[in-house]
Length: 436
Image 1 (cartoon, rainbow, N blue to C red):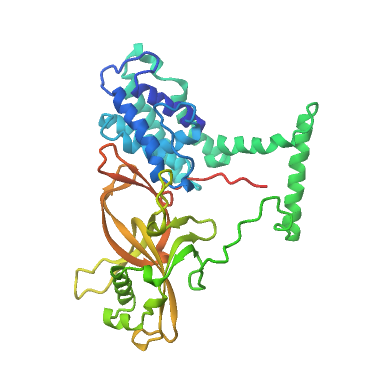
Image 2: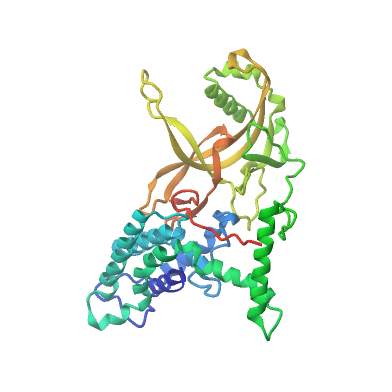
């Protein structure tokens, strides 16, 4: 994938900044003003504060910080940032061409690709190259240098996938990191390849011993995983997450939030607020600062208990999925539920206990883990599938089990629209995890 991140995307940037082989724009006006490109670079760097550290390193200023722009950072920029910041700055055909490349890369990075999808991907690559020639070469033989070999190389990406599998099985990122693991094994300058061979053979032997005798944990060379803090809170009814400290007593919960908690339970139990209020132990409501999705999930912070810091990367915005009644506005219609995705800022985390109550169909006392989220008022999606909003909506209290993961955000150059970066949707890519 260095073909794209170290060659094709840099070629496009040179076109947009007027530095590609001393060629001009020809019959089109797609060159960006210097101040516009500087603003794009500055906005790219500023976006790091709105993107959680779980997404990777802070995006560098692509206009000024050349040394920090690696293939990895160009990848993130192409996938999530460029389609947003260049919208309205490039002419529509050129911006659509960029978005097409972003979608092609997104598809290539999927963990699984069906054969039918491969044929669609092949056609997309062919169309992108033809559009490139139309937009930049413009059918002028005097501009033949506008078509470097790397552009043609995109036509063979699908061939490689068909022959050796998805790109994550062979792309340069894991290969480079695997080479980094091999370097310490080279103990002999005279016989380096023998040293590498021995290292790989010993690793294979060790892996087989672990599998055959079930001693993977005992023979692991990795640092043991961090233990769950003793002061955390968990429930058997919520096996996918735990709450982490610090925590605050019920006196820290304002009355409007208590009312929203009651409304949430009234909806859950199909009851009234008066009945629910009767059984909630308000003195037992506890606020927590952080929720962790287990099995490798994200740590999500409650904004109300997160101290402000200028260099903090925002880890309070989340994706959550709920069932919504499509017939809610039809009084006599049967409920018809469908799953919908929402985005918002996680503001509070609660542990709430309700006493046994026949009116609520609770035979025994029961404890719940809840989240208060201020919903983003979504306005639609872009061509690449990125959702965006301009304003925040009301705060709603939901069960913590519906909260899925962290999201990133990026603000458009117009400072009005904010776009969602959701790694859990169809844009989810493969990530390299080093072995032992």
